[in-house]
Image 1 (spheres, one colour):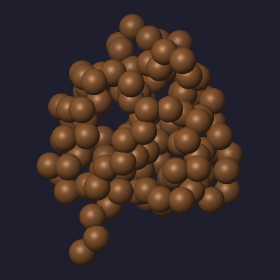
Image 2 (tube, helix red, strand yellow; image 1 turned 90 degrees about the vertical axis):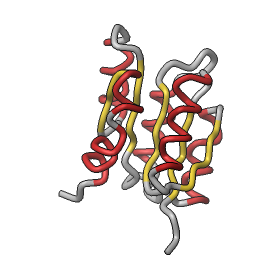
Image 3 (cartoon, helix red, strand yellow; image 1 turned 135 degrees about the horizontal axis):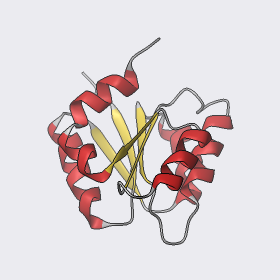
Image 4 (cartoon, one colour; image 1 turned 30 degrees about the vertical axis):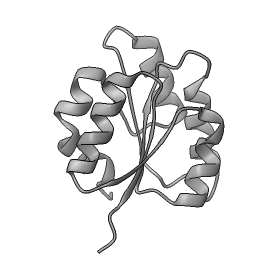
Length: 124
């Protein structure tokens, strides 16, 4: 059976690498990218099961990339989970407005990943 693919966008090593390792433990193939510019093209080409993004990016407006992903017909169905520090309330709100299906804090993303994946992938 083919392992599902998750695209993970992050710049900071922690929790980014922890997240990649945890996804691999959960039997996901993981493609890591560090720039939002390639997110839509990568998602369109690779057809992931989901996308997980770190909202804190030094040189990028990652919420704009989420919006592009959600507006692009071939990728709009892909669930996006976004994470940020607990005190980044405005950034979290922007991610929700851009189309992230779940927005969680950094501490929760790795510790509660199986439950978050289940919730994001739930078909309604």
